[in-house]
Image (cartoon, rainbow, N blue to C red; front, side, top):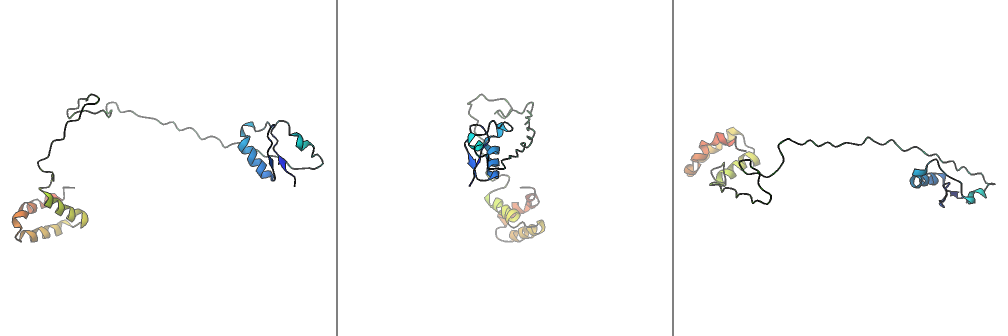
Length: 161
């Protein structure tokens, strides 16, 4: 079986198929396309055998235009750490502690109101009319004292999210 030799000077690679030779040339000799140099001496001795060693070299695809990233810098929003008055803090300055809230459940009156609101609006997704009926029913029970302020703020519950 005849082997095809790479036509580039100094390359000793041989191939069984013409398409393998073409792949080799496109991968290994892309920078030398068109400049094959002298064929190796071993192919000159095969003058009695006519081989089709024509290599079609396709030009590389055109390069895509380079994307130019632009960065727009805001004139006064720099991301530097400042205090509540907008004065910049020195590097390494400790941040002031957050003020403790009197009611950690704010804007709700307490944990019970938060849980009920969360149940009605997120879990059940109850309508305003049904919430009104539920709160009216609850206010008629013994827990009326605990729910009095909750019923008074029923219309505000829709605004709290």
